[in-house]
Length: 418
Ligand code: ATP
Ligand code: MG
Image (cartoon, rainbow, N blue to C red):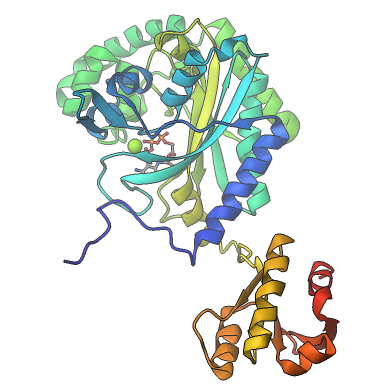
């Protein structure tokens, strides 16, 4: 029997993990610099939470969830995203009593039953954050800055920021009525999904993947032109804050999230490189979500970034990630006595946080040299009876072959100074 990884899943192999570590470290670092703390939420929740929290008219909920009954007969779903779980945790743990805004970031796996494509998987990873308790628009601009600074620190360029406002239930309901009047004569020519959206939520017809390019959709009235005064002022506030820090954006009236609890700011970071699944990061404000999930009315905002898509983009841009060089030295032993001494030296080095390797395969001296050469470990020390007697060893820098004599019990000092 030969097993294969399930469709849509992928091993992240030791040979590439350094890229993930770098991205994870930089993302966490940027979030910390803004005052966000990490939250870790469970992989599965009760299905109902996602129906409420993600919305039971969305593709994610209607088509893509991994839902099953557990042995206790409960309907369980593997998280398709992070927001619903974080909102559940915020309410359940009484975080509303913490000083506002309550700001958290996460690094999670997510599961969606989707057709496989480059950058579209069934198990994938998201970096994201959520902030509760602030109406913005300062915090809207802040979370966009988190993404912007993350990209800059990773050396990523040419990612376009698209922003829009989808208003509040008041202006959106009025607009939906207007949109219904507009689409009524055309609805019969539209796709099945759009016919259902026409009844339930006309706003979502705007970003239909099937009908979206049709003139009738492209020429539809735009919500951004029909915001109420408060929503307009909020959007202007966001724009002026982005302008103030020099973050460039385009206004894209086609970004919609047609659920009642999504409000005002929506944004996407889209790659300008062809061949990458377009949207690397999507986010927005959800002032009605906490209440919808059983908490007190609380404004909220967040985003999620697809890590696989981010890494594909980084690769397309030729970004170099430093390799993991935590192992600093290879110690080769020429005798049993030397190997015993090496075991002790290695123990002490590791205790001091200095990575080292020695033979674990009973290799010949020649084979050890070959292994050390291939491993990319930057320093080499060969210890035999002479070195034991003199208490000194020559440490070779593999890169240029230079040799430095070092006392056997000063190896840690030598390597730390490097
Ligand atoms: P798309 O329109 O590409 O399906 P989405 O609107 O479903 O994206 P969100 O729910 O906003 O995506 O998720 C946030 C981010 O997570 C996306 O911008 C993307 O980078 C990533 N993402 C979403 N679905 C997948 C997937 N199946 N595989 C890999 N990454 C994904
Ligand atoms: Mg999707």
